[in-house]
Structures are given as C-alpha cells and as structure tokens.
Image (cartoon, rainbow, N blue to C red; front, top):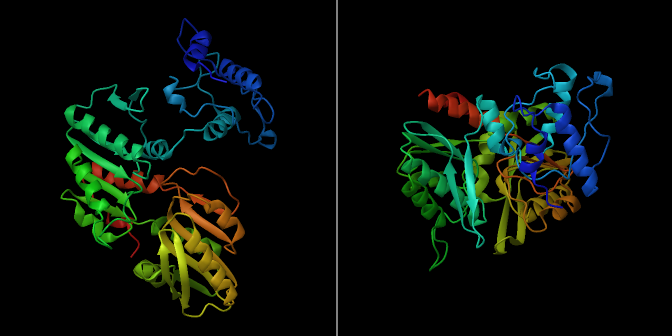
Amino acid sequence: MSVDWDLLVENHLNKGEKKMSLGLLMESINEVLAEVGELKGPKLDLRTPLNEEKQVAITFPGLPDIPLTEIGWSKLNTEEGGEIKGAGRTMLEAYLKNVPGKDLSEKIAKQFGIELGNVNFSHYSDGEFQPSFEESVRGARLFIIGSTQPSSENLMELLLMVDAAKRSSARHITAVVPYFGWARQDRKDKPRVPIGAKLIANLIEAAGATRIITMDLHADQIQGFFEKPVDHLYASTIFIPYIQSLKLRKLTIASPDMGGSKRAYAYSRFLKSNVVICYKQRKKANVVSHMELIGKVEGKNVIIVDDMVDTAGTLCKAADLMMERGAESVRAICTHALLSGNAYENIEKSKLKELIVTDSIPQQKKSDKVKVLTCSKLFADVMHNVNSNKSINSFFIK
C-alpha cells in the first residue's frame, strides 16, 4: 500500500499553530498500519504517561523507509503545545529508534549536537537523481557523510553532493566516508585490471572535497592515493572496550590472512595476548581453496580481526578450522559488514560464536550471532576536533 504522507500530515496539522500533536500523530500511524495489516504489538497512546514497569519495546515494520525529518516534523509536541517529557518522552524515543531510515548520518548528527542539513533529491524515471541543498551553505564548513559501498549509486550520491557544495560556495568540504568502497582494488594483481581505489580517490577530489575522514581502509597505503588531507580512523577504539568487557581467559588474536597480520599484532600488543595467522589460497574472488593455521589455539578463546566481511566464507572457514584444532571459542570482529550473498547463512551454520561489526554499512538483516556497535560517536568527536582545528591524536589506541 502506498501512503501519501504529505497529505496525511496536512490533514492533521493544527491550522492555527502549524504543529502536529503527538496524539494525532500516533492515531494517524495506527490507522495507516491497521489498513496495511502490518501493525505488530499494542497500539501506542503517548498522551497517557506510563510507569517504567509498563513500558514495552514496540516496532512498526509497516512504516515507510524515510526519516521523520523528511515528513516535516522538527519537534513533536503535546496537544497543549508543551514538549513531551518523562515516561512519554522515553517511549517516543524508543519508537523513533525503530523507524526505518534512521541511518548512520543521523546518529552522527545527533552525537555532534546538530540536525542534518536539508537536502532534497529529485529522481528521474530512468534512475538518474539530482541532490540540492535547500539552505545556504555559502562560506560554511560542510561534512558530507556517505559510504561508497557498491552499488555505484552510493558513490554517485556522494560525488554529486560534494560537487553541489563546491558550486554553492562552501568554504570547506569534508567527505566523511565511514566505509571506503572499491578499496580491494588497491593494486594491479594481474595484467589489464584497474586500480579502482585510486580512481575513486581521484573522483572524490575532483568533485571538490578538501578533506577526507574514513575508517579502517582495506590497505593503509590508500591514504597516499589522495592529495588532500586524510584522517584515517581505526575501529579498535570501538572494539577493544567491548573485548575487554567479555573478560575472556586465555585470549588469542587471529588474523584470517597474511595481509591482516599487522592489524592482529596491534590488537594483541594492547590486549597482551598471543597471535595466530591463517594462511589461505584463493581459487577466485570470495572462494578459498585451501587454508592452514600458523600457531596453536588449543584451549584458547580466539578473536579473529579483519577490516571487512563480505560473504563470510573466510571467517567461517577459519572459525571451523580453529574449533577443530581445539579452540574453546571463536569470535570475529570486522569493521565493515558487507554481508553479501550467503553471508548470513554461512554465519549461522558456522562454529563462529559471535560476529561483532560496526554500523558503517546499513545491515539488511538481523542475526543473533551478529552484534552491531555504532561508530557514530567516534566520527562525531573527530568532526568536532576537525571543525575546531584541534588534534585527533587522542582517538587512537596506542
């Protein structure tokens, strides 16, 4: 069922104050969801404050995949015009957290302490789209947030927004790219292939970015593909506190391949643990033909460290191999969760106890084995320091 949300809001606006009351908002949502038959759980009535014991977690899977800001609510108010507080506010926030479309950029903006800028996208029937800033950015320092994972639409969205900002006379344009896609093409590994990561770097700079903030590049040397300053963050500042909270005995850090050994050693040095390395041979992309383990894992709690997980074939194969070699448990931490193809199925069937990832890429499914830690605070704090021309050295674990 297609819902005309603009018409819905217009019908319920208080014509005098031009504000939508919370009661009318919830009534409208319940009416629409009842019509499409997708309302699960009790109806909400936030006009009546609830005690903490009565609060329940409620999800609304029938809501459209758009943030509330696009519908036009900057603040929700009670019918009397006052801001909602107390238990009602708690339930409202719980409800908003379950609205689809609340992506990483909105989390970063909330941590930063401001609202996202007003950007409108015009779409053509052939798939072409055009962003436009609906407010002046002349002389401003802009942070444009967007990962560049395939499909190429994500990259084009970032490039067009950077170009629009440049042509709108923004003073500084920082491209905040939590996941720098196409990074596996960082060199020529056979004849007649492109160096995709270098091409993407050139495109971002040509579009007009004056600074780049990213996290856990597939290869550190990709920083050198840019002529502009690059702030390369590490998710270890997010993962290490979580690892420490597990309080695992006989902890061992593992690298799924030789290329990730430097990352594994960095974790082991801080956590004062041993390191093992998996040696693998690929038959083709995403297919491992042979894997061998270098080091002993018998009786150990192993954590595999990698920068990304795609089909999870390597991770699952490594976890199964380590359990066969006597490991007590195997977990994995991966910054960027692509999780394409049969990734979720592979994870569920494997002996991997837990996969911990960040929200640098939106997750398409939910799994009991996959735990998502937000990187929004890390990016917001770094953006604060960049905006204030302060050092970001404190955001690195040494």
